[in-house]
Length: 93
Image 1 (cartoon, rainbow, N blue to C red):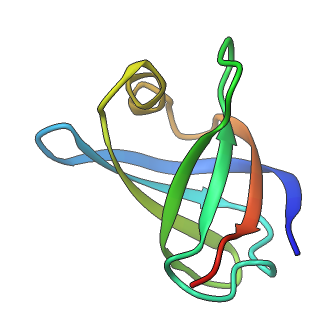
Image 2 (tube, helix red, strand yellow; image 1 turned 180 degrees about the vertical axis):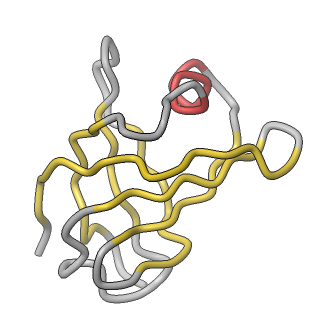
Image 3 (cartoon, rainbow, N blue to C red; image 1 turned 120 degrees about the vertical axis):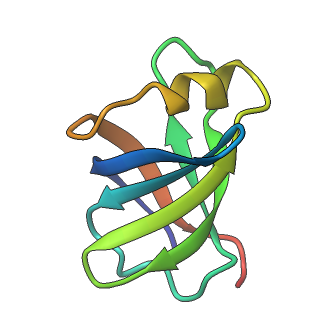
């Protein structure tokens, strides 16, 4: 089962060359295990960006992603407080 909802970026920080850690605040009830993934809708992009879940608790999802194209480049520029449309609970952990 999955859920589409709005998630607020709590932080989006560079942790290594071209690698970022983003923490998203929102409903995590459909994330059952690390290894599942979320789909993030980005402005002016036709397809959502699938990103694996690194960690989650009852209020936030943590993802780690590498900038490899225009979508993840756009993600790396997003500031804390930005609200994203996200599908959660996808895939099997």
